[in-house]
Length: 319
Image (cartoon, rainbow, N blue to C red):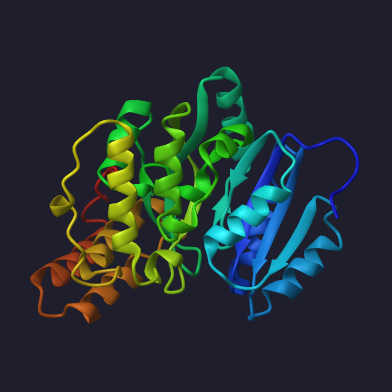
């Protein structure tokens, strides 16, 4: 049932599928926003792990939270069902396993109100792991042309999806999420939004993006690559641009965290002090690739930092 009374300024759209270990923390980070005129639309996409009970418990004391329940058909159906229930002028995407910083909504709203031609704004973000340890800070392009250029190469993370805030009317005009783009729905939507208005990212970190083995980035369904190529072909055609599908070969293996990633996380986690766990990632890299000298060098680097022989290297952009 749609609530009566004035519509909120922001509708927070959160698809939920088997996110029980992280769901309460994700919702708490939304409730802690400095801008409070929002509703939360949580779409339970057929969860079987206790997520439904967590949503019910929080909804009992949080009047801004509405729960939609549906059979599990995938994220596009969940997002469109949630979008249909939203009432806000602006849509803030959020995932059920991530954390947003308290000033996120306020800063994104301020930007959108100062830039009426902008239809979507994201932000930089920081990777965290399943235990909440801080891993790496990732900055994004901030200007529309650079973002669109990255999107046209297939980089759906040019605006990280759970950090995005949209104008609702622009999403509707663009055609919302498309079933044909399941698993690349963010890339597909951004490419269509870029023809409706401007895209942007804020420079500061406003989201902690959680990496874990159940994360959707590591469980993409079969057929994702074909849908990505079709999405890019359509986007190029709509712009009158040539498209060469051979420049987008299928990945040789499923997405996963590699030994290179683990070594990188070990080094970049040093800058976060007690919030990082560099030893965990140095040792995981060693277990993953013990024959690679880089794994031993990383462990030695962490040790030298621990005993004060060196300082951690400065952070670098995640591109």
